[in-house]
Length: 293
Image (cartoon, rainbow, N blue to C red; front, side, top):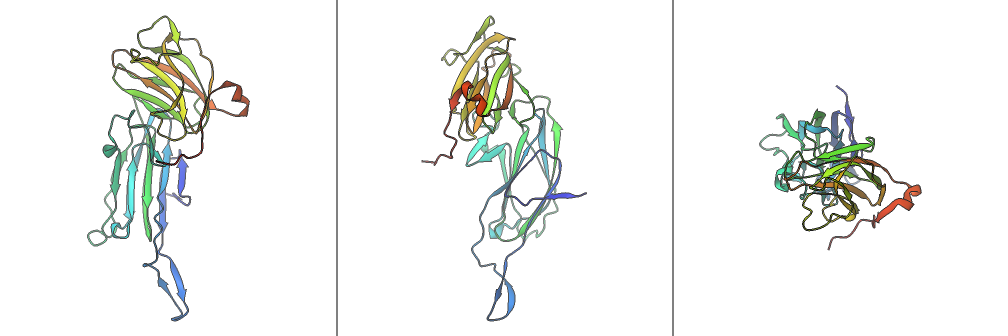
């Protein structure tokens, strides 16, 4: 079976198949001896790279590690992330995901003294339609992973892959948050909503202490949207499409917050925002990377 060779440090794909990476130890010519030598003592490249996987909203990601030659002793490390990570921020946020961060990140490498080349298949599966394989191979090493996408009967947090016009958020009567996140400036509109106790019309100002069930729309500069700039907070019931809201941020999010007392659902349209949508702008973010304090 042919495989895709990972050449870019950040590789984003929606394709199934096998993905292979290999790094060989650097060599230099030494004039004194006139031969090639391995530069194993040279300063290693400690770059962390990633295979970013995203699929249809109603699927999850399964990753099988079929070959592993990542040396722990030389600083090599791999990780499977249940979701995406960028600049130390995660999708879904800790606020939205049912698992804590320790349960969402599996790190591994192999000890050449105990097991030089791992032939043990490792299988990982995400909780939503996005996952990440991270790797740091400073000197030399290789790995082969197989990726496939499996049906998810209860999608909750969704990474918008940019092709679906509508996304449905449902809590199914549970106390949980569900979200749709786009990694681009987006125009969002609520096509239909049934959230909370109010059953006669819709309110776009439900950011109140007593509004435990609500739909939030807004944006943020990074993947951590737990404190996003809000465009609107919506509750009530209506099958009439609401106004378009242009979120000019690096990340655009619609989040359904549910107390568990109601069966909430919302149908949200998402499209890429462009310069013609500036008149619809409800949130403007500084999309430059912010420095951590």
